[in-house]
Image (cartoon, rainbow, N blue to C red; front, side):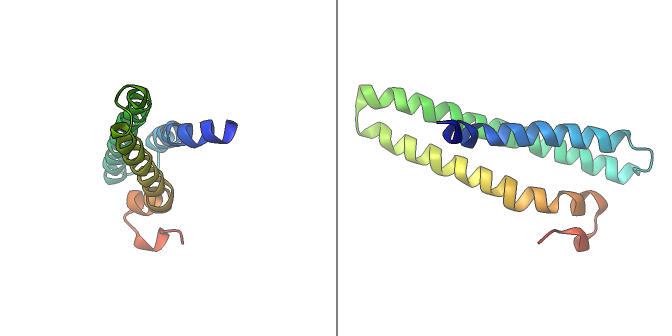
Length: 113
């Protein structure tokens, strides 16, 4: 049960840690103006990721309730919700986290494999 809960909550934890990390980078004295602008862009990206994930997270549970009312039609909403949440998690883990520092420094050599 705890693994299922952690699966649903993990994107929220990552976004929270990212906001803390990016705020810390902004306070750093060695950060240039261009890097600060890129940090703001990443903060907006994280906020949008948070909102989109929350939308599918809420819709997932709404469709679970609807499953008892409209039966089989709600299953499609549950599957789409799970699929979209999985895609968002994949983008966040495999794409964003590996490229974040490279984006801030504008250096493709920093992309982690």
